[in-house]
Length: 252
Image 1 (cartoon, rainbow, N blue to C red):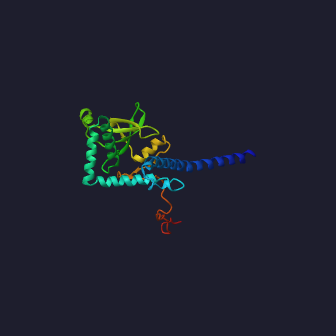
Image 2 (image 1 turned 90 degrees about the vertical axis):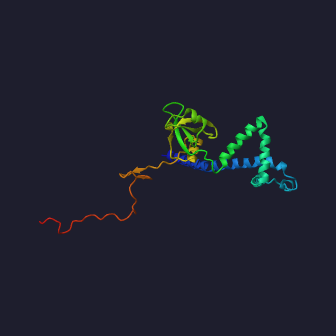
Image 3 (image 1 turned 60 degrees about the horizontal axis):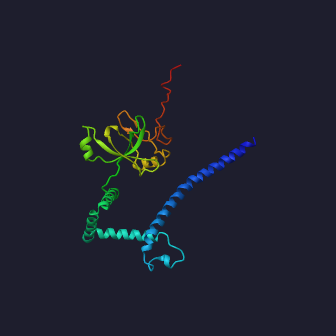
């Protein structure tokens, strides 16, 4: 009898600690990443700011984020200058110079193509989440399905009616690394989850899974989304029960 309150109290304290940890850990990690990024940008930009314009030279404490603000302003100005004819000509001249350097031109060209694809409004990196059997039959891996584009690989390996599709299989818990594979379209099981939900599933190692809606199909073939259950109490007036009147009662 005396152990029950102690066990209940320790369990309650453990639950309080876990609840606080769940609330504080994401905030602390997010703040740490943001603070580290701001410090990294400041360490690159502030040394090139003249002392008269750098507030760290006449303030008692350094101002975090000032280098980041200066970097954002400079990047915006460079984009504004590149949008006109003179700036575009300067950029093309610089790209021609980089194109003559054997090692640099490959790195610059690849990085430029990646950033244009990621940041362009017309670029669709991944359009859907799917499953493929990997690394063996019966074992399924989550993949991001890229858009169907005609490439040299498709011209040489496609089968009639079953084209190859480029899929990216990310690694857990770092979705930025993985494998690029070309899989027949018939071997891909497409999912309804979004790309963001798929990324959360990979980063959390399967712990954070998107909610699944149960769909009910009527006799007419229409799908009804949502959970299947009894209608709520205030769903509307219920049909009145049939009561037997005096005329309908049998005569005694």
